Image (cartoon, rainbow over all chains, first blue to last red; front, side, top):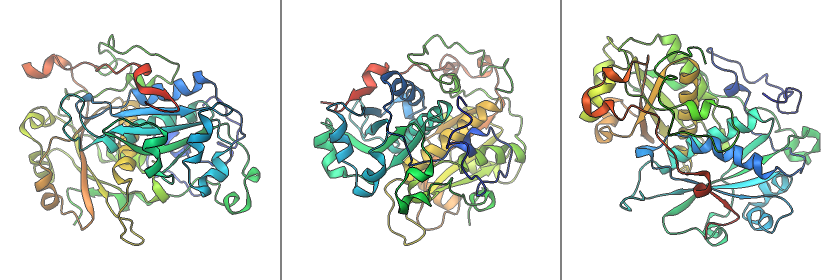
Length: 202
Length: 202
């Protein structure tokens, strides 16, 4: 990781014990809300989207599209306004907002694809890990006004919203308003034994 | 990466030029089909699932479940038999098969979740990158008999199949049968300029 001494890595990881050997980027990635408000550069947003671009997809259909906005530009407020108030509260200090949208039908024949959400989730994970490598916070949200998104983002036919992501320079938990401050820790996970099954779940 | 001199990293990446600076794990990850048939150890499968376990999800709902089978065990053939013939052809030489299934409704209240496929896609990406770090091939498939999966995998109510993944020790492209051999290269991607939009798509 580029920056080892930031609120990202200084967080309390006591709820996150490894249960098997892996590259530590997965356990150390989490979804902070506290950001400084400093804008990302366009080059940084391109690096994030570049990571997502290499994700795998069904028939290499690449259903993902990245609609971004930077603070202090005319594109910023319309994206921010899509968020529910509970998210707008902290995401206003993001350094970039990226709406992740997916083509729901194959481009070749306009037949519906079964995997556009799954595939776009892969792209999001790549972006989140890339942010981590850049010392940036990344937090994906479902809590936005999907019904207003098609108009605000001028989505063509066959495109649907998958997530709205806040990327930003990490700030201390103390910078958050009270109800959010105590939630600013890496969240726990189910035990591996609850998630892995040999051959069948039943 | 653990092994730098394998068919994974010796492949022809000429269709994959970087367009922005990123950690190179994303561009170098691809989806080979040629595998040696050597079984993975249970510890290796646990490392793959551990990476997936740390993925983010809506309300930390963790919808993903990993149903695995190792070669030469009673669980192997039923999972392999779920695959369409075109995939069975090469995936028979995988070192592990993992059916990735998702809970479609929240555990707390059985309300439908909108993001179970998206979230499970994030877990898959983490597994794919972890495989890469272990010098293993990973290839996710949608081409399997979803209608038979609920019975074969004994899925409880509210679980649905998202992907069937072949993990394995990489083998040279020459080991594949003819129609697949020439497709054994890292696939290209759309240009970043086709995927990124400032504020709106239209």
